[in-house]
Length: 166
Image: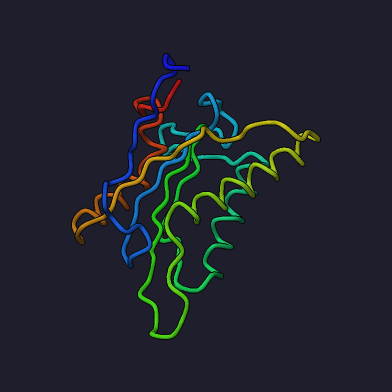
């Protein structure tokens, strides 16, 4: 048991991930399989676009459903073939109200529900849609927010250069 690899801790040590703010999240599919969309177009007149698969469409519904929760909003997202990027806003809450869920709970619920949908679509019970962890970045200022929004918007244009392209 002593030879098992140690998982790297990728969260910012000591940071309260339930505090109000903007967070950039990336989640990759298990083994980076291309399951969520296909990048199509990109010819002379048209920019490439992500054409969603059935599970990709379910992920969009789930992301949009998150906006129904108090204090949690999805600002912008893109569904790529083997990963998704999105911005989560944890809003300030009123005194006496419930606090924000921590970011890992928001991401965990999204992953859990969409994995369940993936298994239903495939008539299975034990398929994995997502890799175990996810990447996040705390967005610190307006300039960084605008840069990340632009990155999300233009991500399909750069698919063949993407570090998640396999």
